[in-house]
Image (cartoon, rainbow, N blue to C red):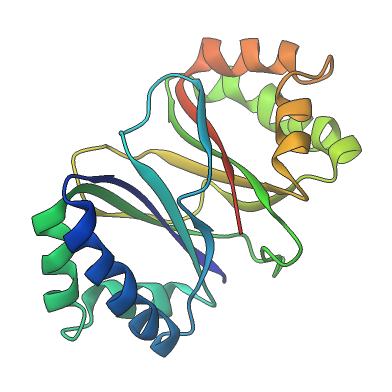
Length: 198
């Protein structure tokens, strides 16, 4: 199943970080990964999110994503990032429907800590209908996760893809979705961003 690497990267040394930005892509390609978000405009619309630029990579499966972050050849490249940034990196596995980020350029990304599964269930059941008018599609919805770096704890990671960020904002503020936010917030602690993709 398609797997995503989400990174929040707060750059402290822009000049030296450029070296990382030029050396990482060939290794990402080696593991069949691709950028779908690379430092696009980001807006925290609920809760909090680590500071810095947001990067999202798409890999064909869980194994490829893990092979990238664990590749010994990546270690010296990651060392450049460690020396020039504060980074938080997570992996999340997508659903089995085979959807990917083709033709998508806006994303809603959420890290949700569920506090009451029974109260959360009506929210989860109703969101797909609220998404439909905006052609939003789930790239990840609570699949297997791995915290690779950083101190942000994970519970349920969600990525929703839209044609553009405008549709993500329209969805998040729509009459059908706003009441569902209240249900989700009563049953979880939510951290949500909207970010522009490539």
